Image (cartoon, rainbow, N blue to C red; front, side, top):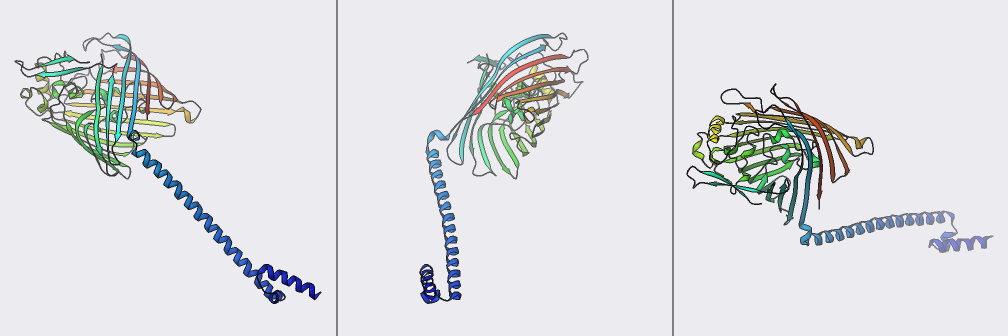
Length: 459
């Protein structure tokens, strides 16, 4: 029996790395086993640590490979290019009046290749980039309006250069060292009016851009100048100094919108303008509130500047908001503007040779406009990419006049219902039906219907 125990002790001692004498002592045998278990536990911990280190090394190697690939892509000139495009084609059936005295409307149906916009961008480095945006309106035609100062009285001459219009809507260079501050200069978008922010067809619900804004401001307003911009804690700001308006083209029906100097070969810049905007949130991403202000004199930019006594200053306040959350879509904007020396500008424009504007009704010293659109995205309830909406637009470019009584012939309200169908994210098909009301009892209400298709994509 003892020989068997001795043999067993020798075997255990051999396995545990102890001597035979220790193996014959049960207490020493237990201690040896405990030491071995402790060593095994330490070895397991070392193996686990090595496994974690190996995973970290593999992750670091993968990140290094990714950075190498990214750096190689950045070094490729083609990766620095950006191309975007959007466009709309519409059919409208409206009741038109031949002139402001007409009280019997005539219905006309029309197709319109409303616009095709292409935008090219190039990223010079992490801080510098440039963008050029070209808009082809109504099939792409163009005229240039030139002022002939050598005529005895000074005259405007139109020259067909290119039925529609081709315009550079943006041509800017930006420097942005960080999120807090950036600067851009060239032909830039003014942050006045939501159409300057939300102008792609999937960014508004109506078939046409909001009538209230186009009856008061230049569409997607752009001017030449310089601006600063940035963001901090979900606040976004813009401040700009840009070329001003020319009051020679101010009209009753769209207030100062026609004073945009895009029709001239060169832009008079004796009177500059100033624009400021502050937003909380992002209108492009969904929910936001914002306020914007514009101020600029206009008389100095007239070609016949001595015909108006007064500065013809324009001030515009814009308050806007949007709530886009889940299936709910709600956007709105209120615009209020004032024009000084409105009577003097009206009288001067009546006698400017070459303009031939037709009916020179009085210019408003105050203008107002607003819109509210509300929609429900049904794709949140059913597998149907359909949005139903209701909309109201209101504009009154003659809210107040300097002298006399303002006519209500140009005070309009549009109400409508419609749908947006998006078979794929890049395409939207729209239908809208509504009513236009003029604030004159003798002018009957008219009905309108519109169909449209739009696209947008980015490479």
